[in-house]
Length: 513
Image (cartoon, rainbow, N blue to C red):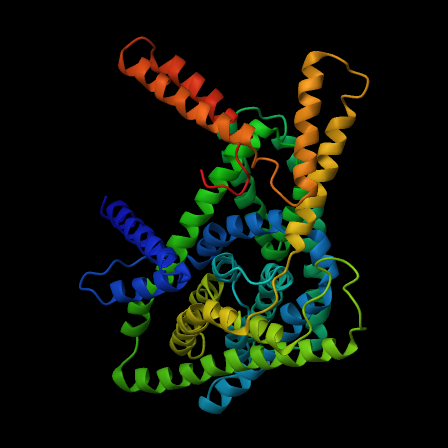
């Protein structure tokens, strides 16, 4: 019962902090991690010794699948060079730089252990990056590059980490011998994720009950992650490829899709809240394992590694972006969202968007007992996670405001195109129909098409304003009937649902509920 009460208290406090963060325009992961760290110093602070593999499965798998489902394949293909430069090259450079730095600071640290440290702090975390990016709202192209990177960099880093830990355990390591395994795991994981998307989709589609469908989706997500781990594959790559494939072949009915998306949004938010609070709470157990002398020595080394992690990514992002800018031919972009903005400003934003998160912490906690300098590696991981969340998370939004990057209208342009094409197709279905109902609908579609072509929102019309006012009046009357006892709750909720759909049909997609 105590654990349950503690979780409720943490969730309540974390939710309040997230509300405060949004009011102050501060990325909520930063405030949650700091809040968890402060709680860790309180007497009787809670301790959660969750298995690291459980941490990854519970906190990363659903968030990663949700992000992959929303990712644009077009933009991922169009930006594959900068995405791979960050997910592979930047991760590799950071791993090497951190390993060399750790060896200089701690000469007794074996090379394999130093590489393991470099690999676990190298990748910006998908959970942290996406949570921050959705609040700071960078330009469209930069956001797509960073979202694509966050889906793939964990895979490359975790594979390096696994090989390095294995080398410490076996006492030997061969780069030549490891490369075939690396390639096999990546392609095998992608193949399994792609193949399983089809049968899983067939299993989900026939379900007509929304709660059953949502539960089934979450069970399958966790099962997919665990299956990949049991097969010795990359769970990250498997889930990402599955999500990208499933999103293109989803056939959920509208009445299932609306509640499904709402539940996924709520669950992923709760998981983010608990994950970043857990990061802060790990400070207590990490410090308890060290004496004063060790703490001082390890803390200085961890701060140096934090600086190395930030600088290496920043330098690489600037170098790569400026090099691409010189190669880019003059003239307008060939297609929306196909290339990053080739400037020092965009490179600076990309380089500064390197927040680490739950993956770094979980892999550090997963180190086996007796691993060389395990206490130092765990402290360094915590310092890097908390340091990047605070330093970069708190300054990313001010940096975007300071740089004044040009406004990207990609989404607005494509929204106008999509609305126009959809309304023209709808008008086409009325050709040859001279009925009164078709005439009314034709006039409504024509009015909406004219509004869409002018760049306006088809919902922003006098008719829809009146419709929303009518719905509000209907709700008040319905509530009065229930209060007077003239109708029961069953009839009330059925009519309420009908009014909900009517209100949604008159409300822009971006409007608040």
